[in-house]
Length: 368
Image (cartoon, rainbow, N blue to C red; front, side, top):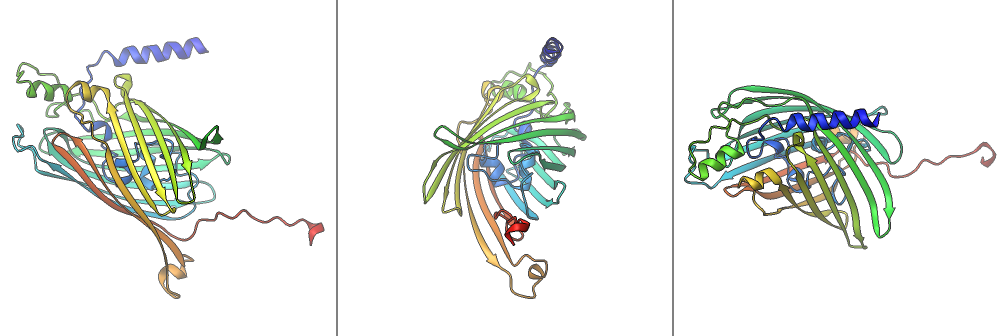
């Protein structure tokens, strides 16, 4: 059995290397551009340095939402600012991203619906315009283990690309180990994404190698772009709380992914949380192929979020639904995507009702 699996892996790796790797810059992260937490959470498959998930976290690992107990609404938007005044393709100075999401827990599983739109056309980030819909299911297996799956459907369009579509699946698992040595809340996550058809039109899409040739004034290059995001991308994640005090928690996360086994991406995250209500996040991404082709920058992202609790008046709609007390988290983030493209994002996540953190009391007949 081991020999068969080894041979299958070798065949997949060999087959992937038969194709030149030339996706557009930003193509691997097209689903991670629309929310502050996605920009600054190090794309964590383990829930980030300080564990916290939103409905959009399913794009990193479908299993992350399994323990959510409340109906959650998530709305966010991003502006992409293109500062390249000499854009050789005449790219737009502004691009936009938007998302809306709904998470619904039940006794059987946690269901998530996520709608995202990205509209950006710039030489340094030429991913065009796309609409993507993701539906996810997550289930806790034990108090420490959860699994999940996603189905994603999308449409690509715009002046710079040929119209195309995507339909693919993703599977994920999550494990909370607990404390380990000096680390607390040690967590592991793994996800396999983009199993199916991804965006593949290449006639008008500008790949990272083609863009490098244009920067180098090498007009002889005619290499077409390749499908994106990478088919069969495996992502592994580790996260833990490194320091905990009465005032502050400090957590770190590290994720490694391998798009189509032709690239290597490392995401490193650092998070600070104060009084369980203020979180400061920063992350840095190393994409080997984008760095090698002069696309990626080396600046970390920065984000901050505030959580506050509010009470609903008696007789109001929320109160009648049993959501007398709820909480909302508002967030903002900045990330330099590429040398001439900056992303500024803002969003709000509304959790309806209170999470049940009290264990049930069990009374035996003899104790009555």
